[in-house]
Image (cartoon, rainbow, N blue to C red; front, side, top):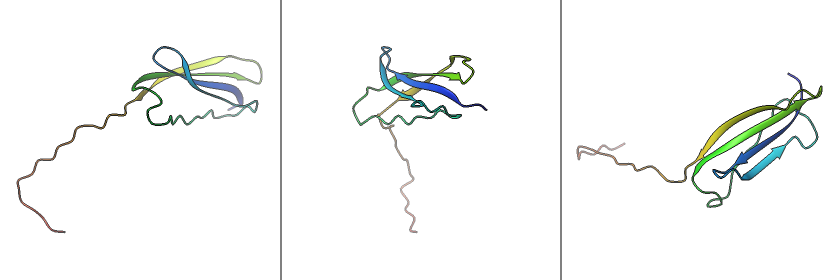
Length: 88
């Protein structure tokens, strides 16, 4: 693999950028980003991510796209038993 300059963006359902990260001028082989918005700072829903990269030879920008789902609602859980108890 060859190092590349890259920029990763996360967009809300309306297409507005809510987070971005780039290589900071130091090309790297593995783009990475941790997106951990503060509780309540983004709405539940499907957010798009887009990655653009250009190698040292000027090839690109190459693009990749995907989705990430924000779901802050806990699932409903129920446990059914037969009424007996077990000691450990």
